[in-house]
Image 1 (spheres, rainbow, N blue to C red):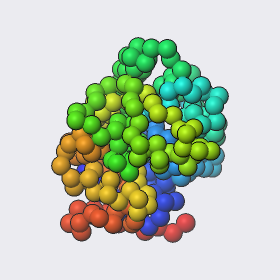
Image 2: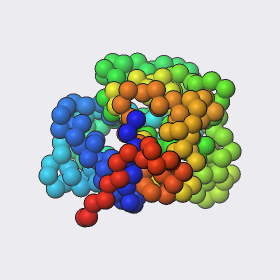
Image 3: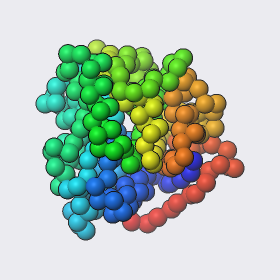
Image 4: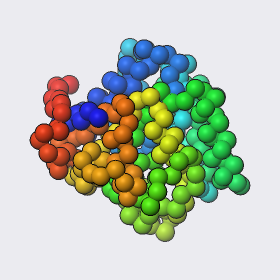
Length: 254
């Protein structure tokens, strides 16, 4: 696990975009696992800028998103389908048929999870998985539990997650209580993982992920066992990390 500390949210996005762009340059037909939420937006903006200015080519790239709210159609502005197209996909040259996001409107969520896993396996697995982290150290929508959930599955969201996500809705009552999410096994089978975190409200979760015991009570802690993880955090999110594991501190201009 490499810990990379940057000075700002914007710089976090730049460093993450550099890793993703490098993956695509090395393997144009890369399979990317992508996250939603406010954390990766700066990365998506940077990748779109690189596509626009120097021609980073997404035409052969396949993407799998981590999760989706249950009960939300793709045209709902609060859905993760909508989020991804508005914040990233419509700004690059990715082929719509190469974009995969769990179907939150599926009648049978167990069958939907199995379908999604087969799609990932059929593409040869995920080359690079981008993750955010919740304040309770969840990754995807894998909430703290007594065991690690394995594959794509239906989850009930914790109250802490509902509270955190309520900022995207008109009121907390509008926040869905259930989602479908990639499981821990699916995430851990990715060749490379990039975990992003920004802000002091993520410092405790980052500490648990990097320094805490490996436990389902802090789902991100499982990443300590992955063979290739880069943790990119700003100074506020890194505030609780001991100096001995702070790794690289990058300051760039522009």
